[in-house]
Image (cartoon, rainbow, N blue to C red; front, top):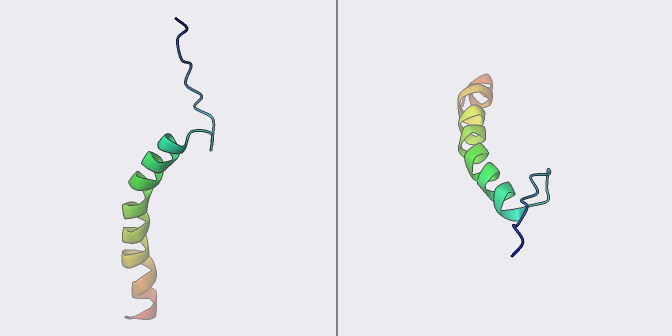
Length: 42
């Protein structure tokens, strides 16, 4: 039985990409809320 080699290349593995996006999305939303929105005084 051969061992599966995981390719951790950028954009190769869909699952890894989704996990990274799931971690980045909340931070991006918070950055937009707390740094860009106050510039417009909303």
